[in-house]
Amino acid sequence: MGLKVCDVAVGNGEIARRGSLLTVQYKLTGGCFGPQGKLIDSSKKFNFRLGKGEVVRGWDLGCAGMAVGGRRRLIVPPKAGYGGEDIGAGPGALLYFDITLLSFR
Image (cartoon, rainbow, N blue to C red; front, side):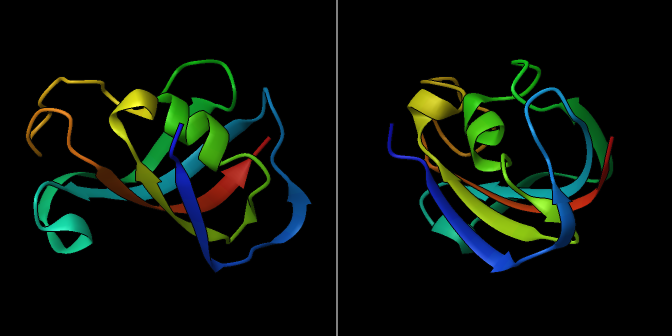
């Protein structure tokens, strides 16, 4: 699939598992300039259920195993993201998500 996951900071405590309701902070960049590319989207507080298909597949796979306070960079290829759809980075571009796990239950 080509998803790349890099722990920037490892969190503490229990690990988020499939079905957990995660609250994250994220920043999305992408396009021809890579991680320093155009800011496409961001949120200080976003909720989703891990592994339930509520977000792109790259998030469901890349956020599994995170602990609260953990920060990850996900490099999401089109197959694990939005396919050939242009969401602001160009059609079929790599997407760079910087995600911090704030809490989960």
